[in-house]
Length: 284
Length: 163
Image (cartoon, rainbow over all chains, first blue to last red):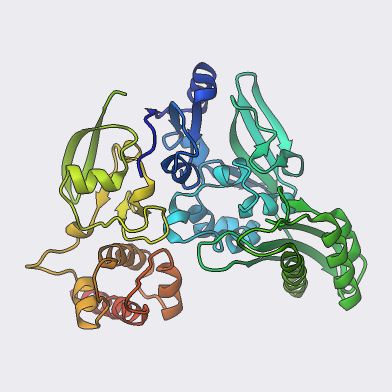
């Protein structure tokens, strides 16, 4: 499988990459780890004239945890996320999620920036970033701007990012309390049939704060404020779990595909969410 | 489209070649450099038969453009051992029947090599998790896992003896 021909560019900094995108226009795409884009190019479902490879942009590989804020450059790989003890201490749900993405070879190449920016509803990081209340930093010809992960996704592969912008950084507050990323997939390497990201803070056995998002049960990730509200102030008993699941089921819109019919997916979303909540609460 | 001048260090040797940017690393390795150890299996980044090491990472070379590998250090199965001097992983795959048809074996061994660099003393579960990107349609994996665990033990005792 040979992709159509393109020109290859390897800028050394973000400013040069943004300039290239502005000059080359619609015919150019940014390449991060390439493990979504290259398969699409090989199938010729993506054909482009120019590929702007970000691998040499050192500033996009930075990981930092400062004053309770986690900042990840867009080119930080899933492998880097798993490998970093600093990140594990600041937000252990990142490692738990990254370990469930694809397989080892793909995780060496796949990046946080690519995973959140390409808008594939099957990707795991967008749901997690909505759960974390993350902020995305985009850089374009007019400079930098910030968008909340919860406002970024419009539809499958449609995001708030403009064609001439590059997602350069992901930022969120370090977490406290319990966490869980629970994912049902048909086999290793598969996208989720349904997955849930849950953060819970508790005091004396009562939930004081919760955040809940799900992956691949709509054409965008689904962050459900109502599901979190259903848990807050409860002891996470069966009634509260059911209320949270009911609230989430009202917010999702799964479609039938080769992972199953809608009824199955709704059932599964409930099971996965219950498991994620139970595990997060246990760790809180 | 113009060709690109690409420099790579492959199995310790400096290589220079002209390549179209769209050419995949697996094609350059096999067709331009004659390294036919890495195999083309699924061509869709699932099977791992094309696994090579690039800059200290296990990668599926069917999902990397040659242009991305410009400046990289690449190791293929040919760089690990040869018929006159097998790598301990190759010995252990032979010893423990870690292969039947052999098609997946170069990718398996190249991946296992990196896995043992990062985790010299893995549990069986860690081996299975670490090898999850490589498919084998013959062995049922049991003997592959055994071979990798045996190679880890062998490499560790050789290291101890050397100290």
